[in-house]
Image (tube, rainbow over all chains, first blue to last red; front, top):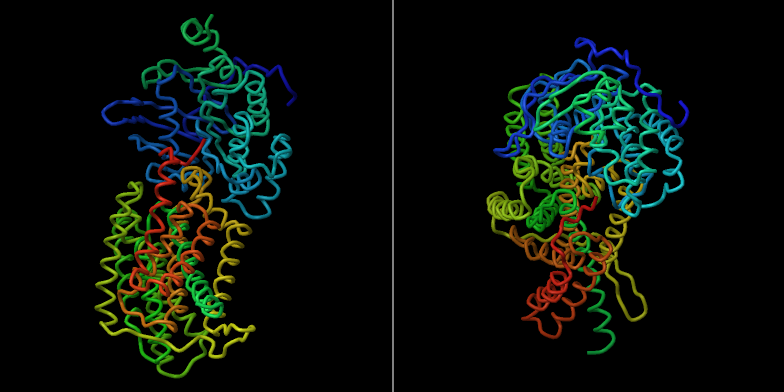
Length: 253
Length: 346
């Protein structure tokens, strides 16, 4: 796929049928102490699909992703690639092919770019790891330039790329991105979304959480809109982008 | 005091310092990977020393039975924590690693009996007996405390230390042990006679330090251990089981303790409770390194050894006080410079 403009999701993108879902979250609730962060949320992602969850700061989007990854406990069923994973610890979910790029990146700050990426391929065989490393460095030429640099000395955009590259090293079935554009310069945001579009072309399924609703809806096939921990709207991304309720609140139209 | 005495003291200090360096490395390793200030590190030294001395004398050391007790307890804890999804394969693996290993070691030691053996074989047996205690103790005590604060882990470590002292008395008895020198000959370098024992200590320290450095710099498992220390959540996100990292760190620490014990027991008589003060000196070195720097810890360990040797000559009754006073200025400087923030930057 070439660079911008990113082709908008076709308006006829069919909603995922439940049985074929790669990820199915059923009635998920998450509490932070007495405060409900996620309330009875059900979402699914089909293979090859880009799904976005948009909503204001504090709507519970990150809490939802963290619960899907097993970082924070949540009630409700999570099925990934046909396996119920509710009792799996984080590392076991990662081994099944579920990858999360968290909002705080969680890089190995005192290790080099190459070491960060290599460890991203922890679950792969050595041959696979070597091959994927070349692919990731091709996808992020900036990381190749800075391969020996320590992660903590890199700029915000480079760290986001490193975090995405590290997650891709495991050849995940589903890549979950938590606010990949947060705090980045507009030029870098464009680059990140171009990479997301590229990834879709190579068949990686993506669950994208974003405050930048316009860019997210542009990149996604389907979308969920969260407010106060609950899903209030869902449907094809193109429809939601045109929906006056979404436009009024999130797109600043 | 003349130059000969000074050289002798410095040599003595370097020999002890090398052992403190090893112990300091173990403490830094455990703290970075598991956030545990591991007070019982010195007890591994005593266990290693007594185990080696008894093996050398042809006896069956009590630690062989103690290892089986630790293994069985760790097995019980593991099976209980997984009681809701036990599979035959899981039970078999757990029985093999937590019961099979100690029993196999017991059998080997029993079969070898009192027959004279090469030094290296007894060293290997000592490591085989004391090394697995580290991961078993982690499974029993520290893994269930996952996510606890540094203070809670520290209190648990003190409890483990007290338990290990009591178990040491029960399994070894109150008698001290001493073993023959690892290398009986000595080397004359001008006016200085370097004992074979000192040479063995230097060689072992260099070898272990090089092996640890290579493990962290060159192997993926070593990098995974480093990653677990730098960012535990990041490590889990890429699929690294941080409990496995912690168990490896504990195994390395127990092994380092056991080897240190083997190095010390030909130089001084070791009792079941002698390890604590030795471990504390490694701790002084690790404090210099902020429980984070292996290089500073190593340099500090040799300084501690030399200060201790000089202090024992000039003011022997104040020897320990002088050594432990060293950490006061370090703590003052460190606390003045500390920003009390989390050291994980994002």
